[in-house]
Length: 120
Image (cartoon, rainbow, N blue to C red; front, side, top):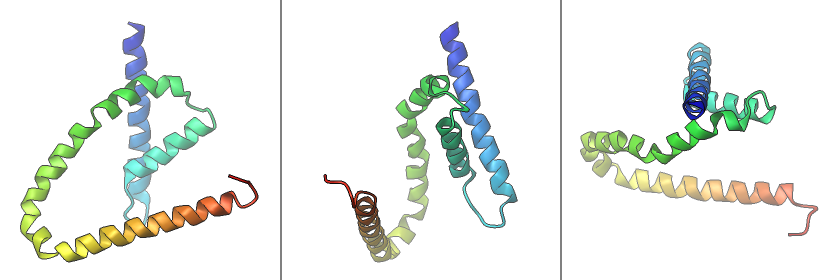
């Protein structure tokens, strides 16, 4: 019985942070995903130990275990836009390559900046 309580408590906490993120997102003047805001709020709550990791560990592991299933509808939805993807494949490949390269450069420079006085 305690395991079920822990699971539902963690799931409820995750859903509350998601709802808070969506609420904040609805009041923003720009379009920003509420789920990302909810994750940031959950991260802050975990960092300041407002929420204990043990409270969301069981339900978080469950969600992560089955997360791949959540990508199936997105993949099927891409089939509706297959012609558009084939039409603009060069732009898509270029943007994937460019953004990957940009992120790698930024992370590398940021790591070097943070560890400039330390010997690795």
